[in-house]
Image (cartoon, rainbow, N blue to C red; front, top):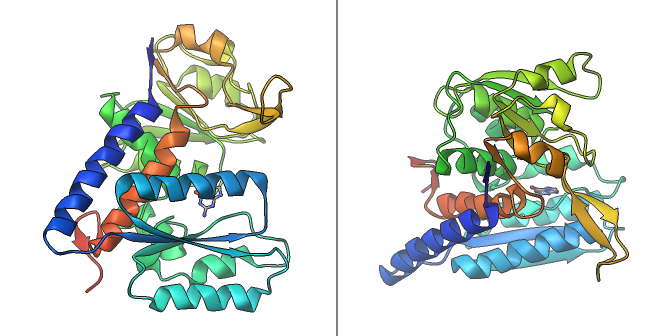
Length: 297
Ligand code: GUN
């Protein structure tokens, strides 16, 4: 069994990004600039955004954090999005989710210029991704594909089961695993209503668990030699930790790991890759590209 080290892979990729940024700056270019909008004080969102700002520093990017209280009006938030769309100094930006209930999150996402949508959440990017056109791919699925590639885990023609159908992980993950130029796999998506979920998992060469239930994937659901990718990051109370919680994955690691060819730990697997892929998307945006295809200037 090989443990997939997302933390080390992310560190390597961030160093590669920093090298490229320093080359750009040495040639008279400017540093990529990522802006993040954070509304309210949700603990998880605060941590994610702080880590995004730190990753910008590690990559040599400029970053701007724009904070609003959770009673902000939707129009004010939309005005901020519009300002960032038109700000030539900002290459890409994100609106950290979830947003307060009185704000229409989809409306906010759709207000983002898709050429600056480094989260890959805008319907134009989602649609382009679904039909295999250059686009910004959302960071978690892109991070998982990058881990599969860097660890030389075969995907072409393999049976892949995606657990979960969220818009930011399950659905794009399934689309990308299906695409010829990405996973090229046979893909099954299972969710909370799937009657044959266990049977599907038992036949899978690759299981990608993004269901948000700690310990959901047990050893009896995993074929000998399967690769298991755990996207779960549920906070569970833990009095022995300073923070008062620990992160729990969707996979019951101790019993599943011995059956696997490859497995990601939680933490230190998919999580660090997600932020790293946001940095890669921002670098592409700064170059006016979607992975090599010009979209701007
Ligand atoms: N909330 C949880 N994950 C994400 C993410 O990848 N991007 C944004 N903007 N919000 C999130």
